[in-house]
Length: 148
Image (cartoon, rainbow, N blue to C red; front, side, top):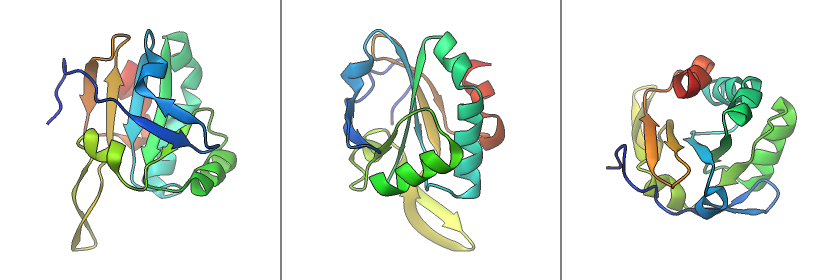
């Protein structure tokens, strides 16, 4: 299990436009790396829109923001267009990044148990060290959990 103070696991993935994003691209900047279950679902939309509405605050405080889910690049493109999201979303259909960040696990929905992406956010500092882990995400006010 990852903890505050651990070196963030290296990641590399494709965003909605096919651009490769990797942890080392953000050296010298703070990074909000958030994991979410599915594009265009109510909780994920609320979370993404809250991050969007506070995006200027993130930038002003030196943060980059990236979302990660199993959804396809095409799904991410539609989600970004529909909700005018200003940050990239990485497509991780093989769950490589999701698992590296302990964001894959058992979930329950309508009495059914299954494995899926856990809603979790990692704040990574300029040196690539995990500064904070938020695993009880408040979707409608997630920005406040990250930067107050």
